[in-house]
Image 1 (cartoon, helix red, strand yellow):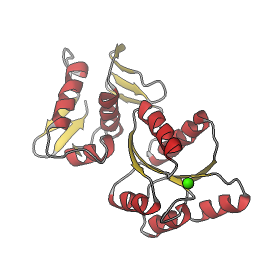
Image 2: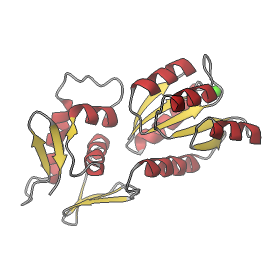
Image 3: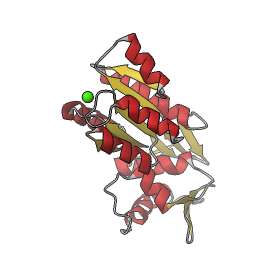
Amino acid sequence: MRILIVEDEKKIAGFIKRGLKDEGHVVDMAHDGEEGHFLASTNDYDLIILDLMLPKMDGITICKKLREAKNPAPILMLTAKDGVKDKVLGLDSGADDYLTKPFAFEEFLARVRNLLKKKGSLAPTKFKVADLTLDLLTHKVTRADKEIGLTTKEYALLEYLMRNAGTVVTRTKISEHVWDIDFDTFTNTIDVYINYLRKKIDSGAKKKLIHTVRGRGYILKE
Ligand code: CA
């Protein structure tokens, strides 16, 4: 999933980014409120981690602006304050959840998982297409009960395809959800990664699951 972190404290931002990347997410960063608001308005994020106290534009203002613009991305607000007033203010401005710094990383991840689940229509922890399974909690992928080892990027791509199983996903959509803002759309990176996945998942199998839809993109289906 593609996540935006808006946090001016570089140490905390870096720590969260590493943790989310380890979980297979794609992460964009903004270090002030204006940049954060700009990125959140121009990209389709699956989750936004938003600090409350930010230079240039504060978290509450960003949150309100995004909701006024009907931006549907779930927002997890972070703050050093733990006053009830700030919590209410954050939630009233349209945030979905709230976490007070300092927090345990495990709790942070649990909240992230919860918000990402809410966003997905099926709220699953496991995906299954034919004999291919992907477990969101353990990151284990199997085909015909045989475990398949994937790199972080391959896993993220497969997760996106499985979340959208049965529908054609365009290269643009894939790049928006599986790659970060520095992704160059003029390269054939996506096709290269699709080929890596095909080798690991479809080669040797009777039924191919990853299909190319000419001129449109890819579809994962039986
Ligand atoms: Ca801050």
